[in-house]
Length: 196
Figure 1 (cartoon, one colour):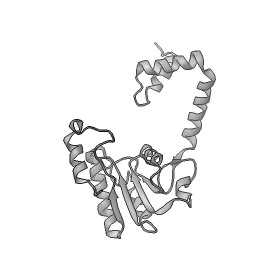
Figure 2: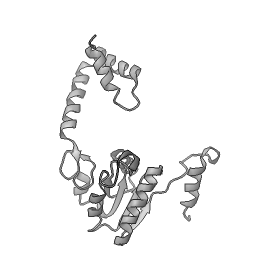
Figure 3: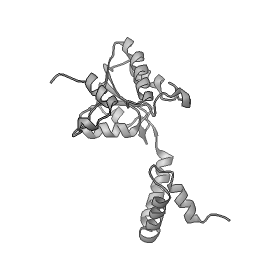
Figure 4: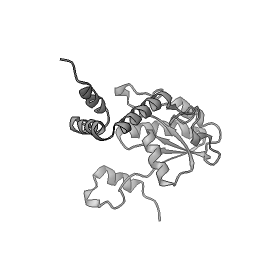
């Protein structure tokens, strides 16, 4: 028996993270019952976005331009380059308002077991970025095994070029109670301490 169109839409929505069958069903019913114009606009924007968004030729972030606005902005400090795993990490750092340099988005981390090597995360493009005005590279990469390996690989590649390499501090979250923090996080917090 062929699937109903509604069932196909419910299945399609399940590709989103955290959306199970019930959530997808509620979304479809809401759109059909209460917001058909919103659904049409959503469908139109999805098609437009998928057709027009690509990676910036310099930083690999998502953009509809050849070179994104951050890379082309003269207001950004080209001497500082922050390396992140994905565009969501870039957005999180931008929201702090603390970094005014430029970015490089890896789109993942090294994972030989999954077939992800230096070419897949753009290490060659990153190396090309580290020849001109860049004086500092800040590694804002997660502390998973793959993240640690990726940060180490990048640091070893960049240090011989005379560029300062640093890593963002990792450890206890604001408002966190020490008794609830795992040993690995506490260890990172202790080794990454700074003088106040």
